[in-house]
Each structure stands twice: as structure tokens, then as C-alpha cells.
Amino acid sequence: MEQIKSQIRNLNENLTGYTIFDTFHAKTKLPRSFLVYGAILFYTFLVILDMGGLGQILCNTIGFIYPSYLSLKALKTVSKNDDTELLVYWVVYGFFNVIEFWSKSILGWIPFYFFFKTLFLIYIAVPQTKGANFVYNKFIVPVSEKYIFTATEKINTTKITNSLEEQFMNRASKASGFSS
Image (cartoon, rainbow, N blue to C red):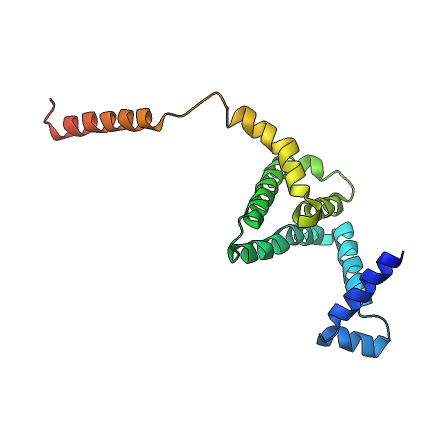
């Protein structure tokens, strides 16, 4: 419990100096963090209600905006670790969106689907949870290794290049009329 109180104190200290939070604190005499928690609660309420497709829009915003921000920051760093983590996220996000697209008619019957989707997207987007790595390693890697990449199959690029060159030369000589 003390750790939670410490986190709230840190959040209140970090929010000091921002006009909106200072105004909220001055008018209500409540901690600045209450505005953050209230906004999260309101956001969650809107996602759960999903009136007029608002839940879907808010859900997809969570899955796109924060990871895009992290991706833009990662492009400016020298380290490749954050790039790899974000690339894994975008692979998982894309994989999930393809599955979701083809199963929309079924998903519409699941109560609070966009709430659960929001929780899933937060889980895979936040680097501290390593959710994207878990989903990638547990579900996507086995599928990709089975159907896309096979360890026993080696591609001989020289053979492919020579074969393409030979086909190109044959077609070019036939087209020019100078067949040998």
C-alpha cells in the first residue's frame, strides 16, 4: 500500500507546473493525479459503452498513438534494442488486426470486446510488460517458422540470379531477332 501512495505522490509532483493540473488543484483542492485517474476512468467508461463506434476509435487510438510515439523516439536513438521491441510490437499489432478483420462478425457478439481489446493493446504496447514479445514468441514465431521460414530450406541466391539472367538473355535475344 505504501508503494501505491509513493507512486501517487510521484505523479502529483511530476504534474506540478502544468497549467491544466495546477488549475484543477487550485479549484478543487484535490491532488493533481485525480485528474489523470478521472480521465482514465472516463476513457474506460467510453470504451465500455462503445456508443456509435466510439469504443472502437478510442481502442485503436490506444493501440496506435502511444506505440507510434515510442517508434518516433526510437528512430532517434543509437540503440537497436528499442527498435527491435517496437518492430515486434508492430508485427503483433498487424497480425492481430488481420485476424480481427476476418472475424469481425463473430467479435461483435462478444460483450465489452473493445474494452478487452484495449487491455490487450496496452499489454502489448507497454515495454515493461514485454507483452508483444510473449505473443510474438508464443504464437507468431511457430506459425512463421512452420509456414514462412523453414530451417532446412536454404535459398541459393547465386542459382536464382543465374537462372533469371539466363531467362532474361533468352527472351532479350528472341525479342531482338538475334537468336543464337
